[in-house]
Length: 316
Image (cartoon, rainbow, N blue to C red; front, top):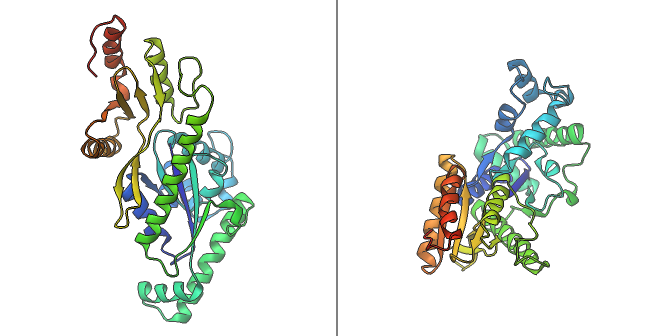
């Protein structure tokens, strides 16, 4: 699933931008705190969790699950986002997801005077205290990324987009990132459409983003149902200037039934987000047929497709 990583200076609006993206896209927001509490593995003790939150070096200690804590956290995180689109804040996530086609790495920064003014207002401190606070936070961030990943957090090559919020609001920054994300997704889909053999999936399968998609494709192939993978992106929300702020790319298109299929998990929040997008798509594009299918409904759907295999009428 797609991922947006946010690396930010303190008081650069990075946290507000991450929260805005999570809300607008309907993606899960994963912070450093939630990452360290959820992904170190079941064998991690209360002491391990406390040390992981306090010491960057502890991430390099061996875990009882094999490998270092950093390796276990990275493995569990990558496995989790296979089925859950997410916005990740901090923890050097731009390095963890470096080079991935489905990841967009963003760096948020602002001039020192702007961040000092924001800190004065937010924390009710003097400009001198704010300056000291911001410099200390930046040193800690740099030290963490350097210690854990051996990288410089300010290195431009780590990011797809570096955004100066000195004269931007959080909402404007969110719109900019969403526009970039939408453009990259459209380019990715177009590159697939131009690839040889993309219109016939029965002989050559694409690289899927989740195991559920691969299983569903095998099911369709079994019943000789022709399909296309993510063939079209539908804009479903725009800003006041007409720029697309939210789009929907259904997972599959079944040619015979002229129907788009979007797969989802049993997670209620995630399923609700998918259904909301599907409802909006139907309202905006009345001639488009779309169904949201739960992974647990595969067997039931297989029976319905089996009827179609016997040349009877099938109604999806």
